[in-house]
Image (cartoon, rainbow, N blue to C red):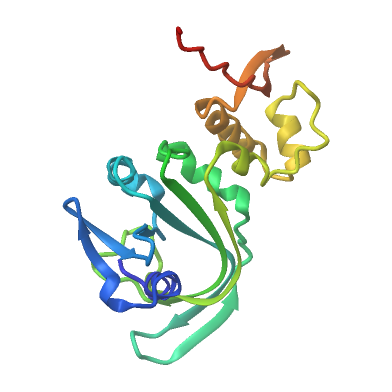
Length: 229
């Protein structure tokens, strides 16, 4: 579902609408900026564009923009263009470390030519009563999501950039996901996803066990082989 926030962010990155919805290598691209970089705004799961991005970065510079709802007002309406029944702020607030929930299934970051922009936003979510197409579990349908404010934007290109999002200065040289969860102030399940992502990126390495918990440490950088002269 195309939402207002998708269009709003697209216009923030590329104001020229003639550069929106461009066909590149057989794919529909949200926008192309003045430097020729491909801009993809992804409000849904990053996994949905994994294969597309993997192919595009082979020949292009790509910026994937992932908005996170740091604050969200939920507006419930009787029907589209109907009266407002209620308006409240959601108690759920996304933080930067929520990106690990997405990266577990993305698998493309980091890659040469890829930039990942995390955009912390305040959003407004418009809800209406469920339609026939709604899941039977849903008590509402999301009509639209609108951008109220961009609170901050962080650009990542390397695993080290991602690691620097976490408050890791108090981590010991060898640590468990419980340690990572504590110092980074995130739930253990999310710290486990973060550790798995960093292992896949070869930024963390296993260093042993403590009871039933795996221990991690920063991976040693690979030495470049000298060319035979």
